[in-house]
Image 1 (cartoon, rainbow, N blue to C red):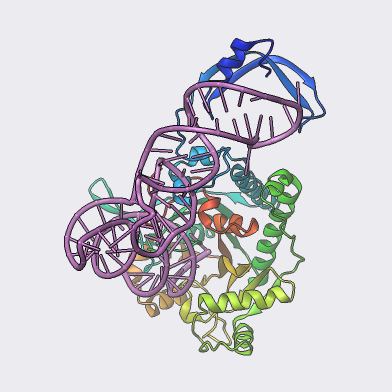
Image 2 (cartoon, rainbow, N blue to C red; image 1 turned 30 degrees about the vertical axis):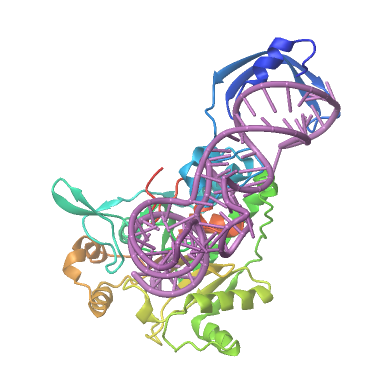
Length: 387
RNA sequence: GCCCCGGUGGUCUAGCGGUCUAUGAUCCCGGCCUGUCGAGCCGGGUGCUCGGGUUCGAAUCCCGACCGGGGCGCCA
């Protein structure tokens, strides 16, 4: 826009406030001085929607903004291309998961998010009312996807919100997250589950690299495609690694965050960003996980770790009715409250296994985002319920 | 919930007992300049989270509330 030639138009242009929505009519012509090689010589400018000032959040300015300010004004925050890029990547991840699992014969399902009873007991549930009755927001599709294993829908997955009323205040927890769950029948053993999960994750990273190049460049991210099979690190070996690094974890106890990070850096030194931590003690896993027949204190369970953070947990499920009921009692749960679930095990249930995988966390680690909230459009945490 | 750190114009910051009628940037307003830039220059505008206390004097020190950041627990 030049002042000489059309002073009135220049004047009106200079009155337009930042972030206004405008329509410009004019001539496009090449110009080597301009970044993209083209410039638009305006002959007419219409303001379709004027912006107010000052902006509650800088968009094109030199100054930054704190996370809280950003999430209070997410619509403006997302006008920054590098913030939008995260969601292009997230979308590519989701497309890749669906594409890959469809090719493996999976069916995408949806299970209820309103439930009459707590799924696994212990976990903190959001309570709500349902026509005068108590109801809860689902914290996991676990029991439903297992029920489906008795139906002939042998391979299912679900990508849906999950709710946890745990007051966790960390960069990797939110109260509403997107869970990618899968469950597979007729498995031989856990290896079948490992292969499916690692193949799916590797495919997702490959596809993001291929299809979200611009977004990755904006985010200065360069995720590595893992070599398969991923390292399987049994719990007992993990404890040894910790001991060799001066950290003692009692055999049978859970590995705390510090330990998890130590193992993460140990395996990173061996070149493993992604790996399975396997065969956890039975005592720290839920009732539906199958114990090892030869060492019942340990289980056919696993976590998938990525850059020292937990992405998924899963395992082979206990499909034998009597054993399952006994395990519930051992964990202090009353089987009567789970009749809707147990019923499905009484009339023929194939051996099966699966996982629950955190999409938001995966996008966070994939892009090395410092906070999981960055990977969510409108995050929900202990204090944030708006917008 | 516990531990550590912090709350200064719309936004992001400097200041950490008097020299603060508070720094710089951004933004907005006015002016100048300008062929490429989240351009530049000049002038103006907007602020110490709230409530107590200490002190001759508090943005600055103490206590509390509220809010935020990080860590832990827990997990996806």
